[in-house]
Image (cartoon, rainbow, N blue to C red; front, side, top):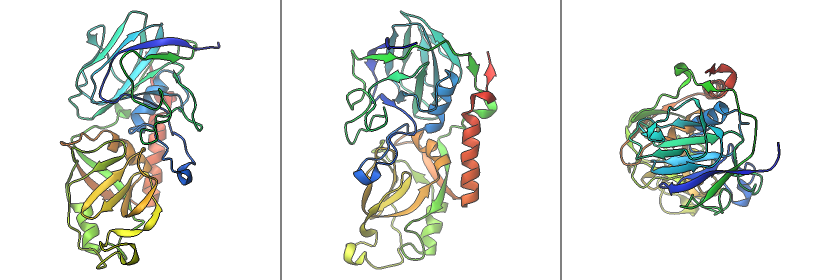
Length: 330
């Protein structure tokens, strides 16, 4: 089967609905591009698996809801992510975590997501067809590339798909569903700028033992936490600047806890690739999906330090959850 076809008409675009793919455009950080891609890669990958897509197929990321789509062609969809989203198909509840068949004239609607969780992911069989830019279809909001003209969806946009055979309808078992919360435990590893050279031992304990509130001014670039005055193991940043959080410019990791003075910020997939502030810890790959479901202004985080071996085991568990061979046929 070849070609593309119109699959959705955007009636109401929501807050910042984006076309994303996973894992985004890797390998371009030296050129100033973070990879973009979904904030919650776990729900995104599950939604794609439920409609028979390859893991890198493009799908929709829907923060906070308020999206309405009119279906233009018969196809299969799956929605995964935040709870209490009030997502509907023709005004009837649309079940999450399973394959759903839709036909022309159907309407998919979503009011404000109540949570727990903050983002939904909607996958369509064959993927959303948008141009590949620098190796990916992901929307990079900081650079204005990828997705639909490098921007969030707008009213009147028409999304296209690639024709594929109807997938086997599947359901994600309850035991594999991500555990959503309002108070989160997030796995981290130390550094690259931790104790004893940058933080004191007590500072690191403070990071782990304190309950951090997610600031309202959080987005795909970074998740801001409430301010905290660390003691720091040095009096200044030396040649890098007066504050001990200053360092000479260096590369930033995705999920890095970037500390600008007293404000920790967890760097998201659209974040800056480099800068002159310490990264005192890094959220492990298997914990990044939780950052995508944090609700700004409401949710809290407690960090848990894990060794490399546990971080790798957690990633293997993510792969099991996104393997459709572990799903149930409907």
